[in-house]
Amino acid sequence: MKPARLSMRLGLAVTAMSALLVLVMAAFAYASISHQLDLRAREGLSEKLGQIEHSLAESSASAAEIVLQPHNLRDQIIGHDNFTLTILDSSAPRKRLLSIGNNEDIALQVPLNETGLQGFEVLKSAQGDETLTAYKLINLKKDRPVLVILALDRKSDALLLAAYVKSTIIALPFILLLVGSCAWWVIHRGLQPLQAFRRVAQRITARDLSHRIQAADLPEELSDLAHAVNFMLDRLDSDIQQLARFCDDLAHELRSPMNNLMGKAQVTLSKERPPAQYKQVLESCTEELERLSRMVSQMLFLASASQPSAPLSFETIELQEEAIKVTELFSLSAEEKQMSLRVQGSAQVSGDRLMIQRAISNLLSNAIRHGTPGSEVTITLASQPDAISLAVRNAGEGIEAEHLPRLFDRFYRVHASRSRQQGGTGLGLAIVRSIMNVHEGRATVTSEPGDATTFSLIFPARPQLGARVVR
Ligand SMILES: Nc1ncnc2c1ncn2[C@@H]1O[C@H](COP(=O)(O)OP(=O)(O)OP(=O)(O)O)[C@@H](O)[C@H]1O
Ligand SMILES: [Mg+2]
Image 1 (cartoon, rainbow, N blue to C red):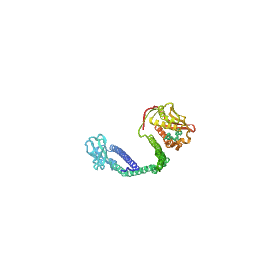
Image 2: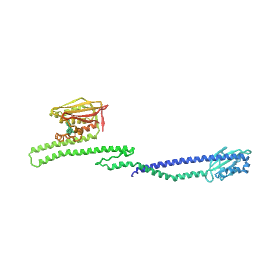
Image 3: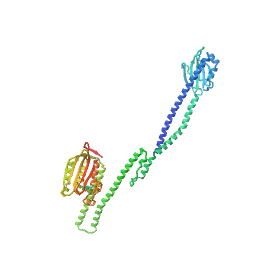
Image 4: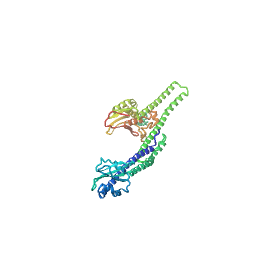
């Protein structure tokens, strides 16, 4: 089932809460009105009973006088339709001396056995209406005390309360409809700024990631979200551009050796040739294929170093030991150029051994390839409080400053054709940078053209070196 619209859901929730609130308030008001009416009824009854007592004291000295001269008492009650006065002989219970009012029978219901000298009783009249009765034993000057029972018919109060309940029940649906519509409208308007996200999301495609959400026009709660989305789009944009550049570069890099191979094969096959010539062509093709295969394996390594799928096992590594191992591997190619290799200093880092060896060998192979024949290549290790560095320095023609910022990009070469001829793929330094990213470090280069070039691996200094696992 399709989930309901957010504005609808919130509107209904607000309506339900309002309904609950209105009901609680109505119940509270009902209880409060009912309590007030009760209080007023008791006060009214007490007051009237007081007046009757006063009247009895003044005008009737005995029970006989009450029966014969009831005018004073009648005056007290006449005009008050809801009062009924009953005076009983206290010595002969239920013997009625006087009764004024419409509700004469109610006095008989007062539980006289339990009554003390004075009190209140809530009773039901013959018509089923609630009746509040007040009774009091009043002493006469010359006779036995009489029991005065004054009843107040509370039908009008009951009608008032019923009218209140009825009007509340009639008004409730209208109130809820009003509250629900207002809530829906307010929420609907409040969610309008989200349209900015929808508009941008609709326009975004893999080819066009340039659209951004105008965070300045949004309320504070949403502007943070807009900044986060814009930041995500920035990253995606730059990653996709990088990927596109990489694909272009890759196609370009593969096209030249493919064309070479194809050209050589076609020219060779165009006519009959002596076996020695075939052998020579095949050897040259094999060289080209070896370079291609190296490029593919470099790219695979680069991909795995950029996003390692298996956890890397970091261990404490003696950089000096690793540097010496790598120089031993390159001793032959250094000898070919009468170059000497030297490792100086020592340092420890936490890292992946094979990756670090690969980074050092990429720098060393470059240094030997671009170093002046007969010169020395030095690997210097240093431990500073905030960083650990490994610097590979070679004398040579150096690199112009304009090339330095792009040197670590994939396939970037200062002299592309010369480098290709030398078998370079242009991926060595990109791999070094990826390896350093994995180690939360960085790779830097400084060069003085015509003099020397130094590539450095900078590792972060860790308070406690040791094994850790990085995903
Ligand atoms: N020590 C250096 N002296 C001068 N130029 C250098 C030095 N190291 C690298 N370069 C320049 O940087 C470019 C990129 O080097 P990188 O190692 O990435 O690629 P490559 O050496 O051409 O190929 P690969 O390392 O894959 O064999 C080189 O082509 C070269 O022009
Ligand atoms: Mg290289």
